[in-house]
Image (tube, rainbow, N blue to C red; front, side, top):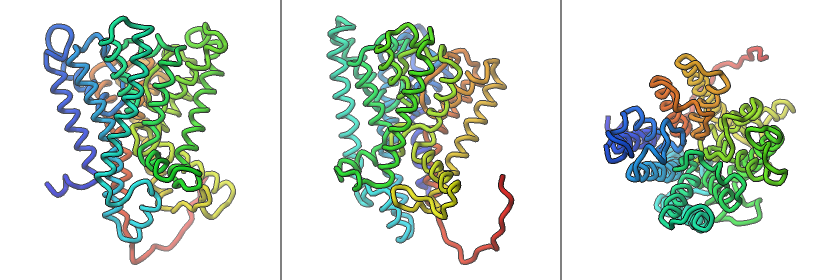
Length: 443
């Protein structure tokens, strides 16, 4: 059993389960709650899971329900979840590469050139330096802005700024403010640093390490880096354009703002479905078309090896290139003049379809346990699976069974794709025989 628990595909899931259990115990302490008594076990479990999985969905208001001690626990869980997922994903990539056969190891090394096979200590140090540097810079900017414009207390400004900076870089989505960032919707000094922190954290450490190591021109970058950056740019533009166009005259969101004032909240809102989780406009007032586009963005998520959730942008866009090659009748799938192996294509398809199955199963379960409409339930399920944290406002009103469904979705969304991808990589093996080929009718 001990040998089984040390299997690489089980390291990250078990580590996150342990963190969730510890967080639940701490949040159930009477000192963690602002009011009298201790938090109910389900409330503590939901909050702990949401924090460790970097989701941000809440059943109680973070700023008023939890005491300063409880908020510190939540922030520590978010930081641990963010740092752990970045280092865990990177180290699992290294561990997988070591366990593969020499030929497969060399191929893996070429595909993830940002990571050196024996550089475990360096990976941890670089991730820590990146994490705390970005969070410190963002926190400093927010402190100066909040102290000069929104609060008279340095202590309050410092706490809110640190909380938001950590939550932004880790894509945690937690905020001590009940209305998240709606108060700062048109303030670039508050919103832009948050957007940048969310994007940097969501891109993934392998991409950032590759860029820092190889510099420019872009031709030196790995295929993973190029594909992640291209996909990120496309999705950011898609989200911004969708929110700006569809919510332009919506009286519940961007409608009351001036023409130029709408640009920042539209870009902010279009960036957050990449699992950032903050909102500067009322999500419950979004048009159905905007909710549908947000659903897609949340399901795709961000970059591999980062703090973002979802099936990951490389998975989605790799499958898009597979479809494009099939439509054109190409024998191989090529990206940036590099051929993508069938093994990688099958892994991407597996991760995507398992994600669809998890989100669909969760949606059906929520429909069974609640009376909310399909669009609201689907949004909540995808927000949980994609570890986004955006909500139409129904999460606090869900019954215990529905909350347990979201807890499972948040956990699967955070560790599921990593565990599945690692397990598939470790199961790569050759056969001495092949069955006869046959072609079933497709379509």
